[in-house]
Amino acid sequence: MNLLAVENLGKNFGERILFEGLNFGLAQGDKVALIASNGTGKSTMLKIIAGIDNADEGEVIFRNKCKVSYLQQDAIFDDNFTINELINSKHNKISILVTDYEKAVDLHCKENSTKSQKILEDLTAKMEQENAWDYQRRSKKILSKFNISNFEQKVCELSGGQKKRLSLALILLENADILLLDEPTNHLDISMIEWLEKYLQQEKITLLMVTHDRYFLERSCNHIIELEGGNLYHHKGNFSYFLEKKAARESNFDVEVAKAQKLMKKELEWIRRQPKARGTKSKARIDNFNVVKKKATSKRVKQELNIDVKMDRIGGKILELKNIKKTYGNLTILDGFDYTFKKGERIGILGKNGVGKSTFLNIITGKEKPDGGKIKLGATINYGYFTQGSFGVDEDRRVITVLKDIAEFIVMSDKRKVSASQLLEHFMFTPEMQFTEVKRLSGGEKRRLHLLTVLMKNPNFLILDEPTNDLDLLTLTKLEEFLLQYKGCLILVSHDRFFMDKLTEHLFVFKGKGIIEDHYCTYSEYREKQIQEEKEFKKIQHLEKENTKIKSIRKKLTFNEKFEYDNLEKDLEKLEAERKELESIIQNPNIDMDLMMSISERLGKIINLIDEKEMRWMELDEKQQ
Image: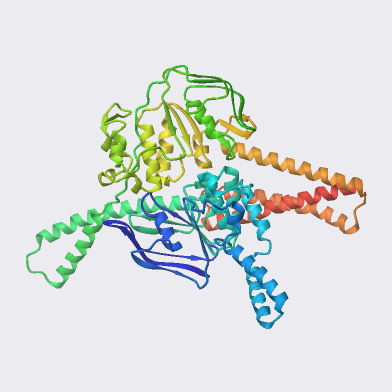
């Protein structure tokens, strides 16, 4: 069932055309990601579909009574409300429905009329449709998933990240027909992202989102639309499929241009030999020549990010932390932390929001003082600190002025000197954009400018706190390439699991209460180990619970339970065999994409069945002993 059609959509800001002539649609259950470079209008397109902004041409058509919920990059709430008041406020569609239903029940109890009966029946049907009966319970459950538990706290007391999480939770509660999500994983820790992935995989959810998180794209989307060069390309599949098709498309384009150039050369020689008078056939051939010429001279205008700056020399002594302590009231961040950093070390930092990751970074860079302990910094160390928030420039200033305030010329890795303007072009800021005020840049362009101001100071110890927020995939890829070649020390805080996996093999895991675990592995290896430990813990808990039951009520297996117990062992053997077979098939690099998606879906079901049957088998096994 089609829910949305976007037809011939266009938007411009003055002479700058963001996009034009765009066409696409959403059917029920579609999970679509929009991919494009920063500044090409991704967020603007979502705002137009949500009805917040207007298109200059084209239209957005919804199926009748289709409900849309939109998550903006920056959450906007009434700061005077508490979280509880916000949940139950007039801004919330489900809350309004629950209030109307309660009023209708009271009215019918008083009047008991045909009219009040009809109103109550209509509202009852809507309550069923919206799954609104347990709204309060669901709201508390989803909010707790995003680490929001103090429902009497005022919105004005929340951080920007907390407001974004609150906004996302409230949108999920609305049961909309279409979810429009702009960078939904920003300000979420990894456990929250993993929960959101599973939530959005529900068949009933229809989704259009903008995100830079590649693992999230891979697991949450079945259709990707790419906006490049003013054209919209459709890819029915996940992120891996998109990368494959994009590479093939670009390769085919280059081949077609090369063929057209050869043909143009041949046709040009023919045209030069022709007399002035032209017959019908000659004219047709000349018209065809003009088509070939256009193709032969076409170019893919593709801006490339070029991150190339000189790194200051780094000495033998880097950074030594001895017995570092830090608390805020009853909250312990560091409790006697010791570590000596080595040359070229790359450390990833993991932990839930609020456990002190940013505080730790501020302490080692001198922005905050520890309560106790010693910090010994090497004489040659030059920090480059890329923070989560704004980088503290006057946004009324022009882009070029921001850079010139730091330096007029910058030394590159090959010892060449380039001007501030040339360096901006390396970072995909055109000459026109360089004289734009910072406040007019998109969120991703501001982050790119912030990154440039950090790197141009030639740091030999880079600290990146959530660097992937709002950056497009092209920028992220180039940043990864630079960091893989970077010879200095690197500390990385990121919820982007792909980014973390690629760049670090040593983790500090902040567990809270001052506990920091040290793991020499990638994020994926750490997470796999964590999942296995959680499974073992749940099994132990289950066994303890069942043992308690058995001790209180000791019964032998019934005939039916004995039959079930015997068959469970056979079922588990078959499921394990099928699991191994499917896993071997899916590892084939030449597998068809549709077949891979079908097998992946079946594999997920089998794994769940194995878990269920194993738990039931253990339950029956304990009972018969």
